[in-house]
Length: 135
Image (cartoon, rainbow, N blue to C red):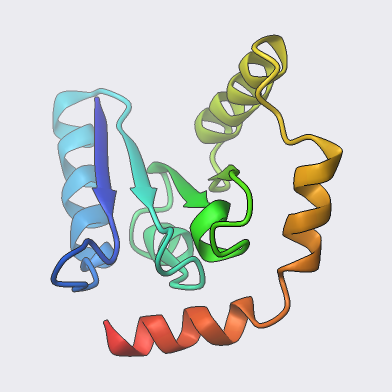
């Protein structure tokens, strides 16, 4: 099964309890004897350490984070996004599949997009920390 979430989700911007979610999904996976993948959109809080919290509370749980770089980094100057896998082989294999698919569909970032993203990264950490505190 795939479980999707967003932290913090608009409009209330409340952070999910990653420990609770990870523990519950890990227990479900053990009972059901099935792999579970947690996919979290961390666009508004990429520094929330969601994957680290998942690993701390459910080391066997596969998890991935999605970050919209067009919002969190470029401030709308270009489009882009990234998928980050946790330490599990299942999640890492999925990210490799995503990369192959993106390449086949010609949807990987172009040099002009990379220039914008690299040039706009200044201050990202501070903006994200402010957003995280406000949530």
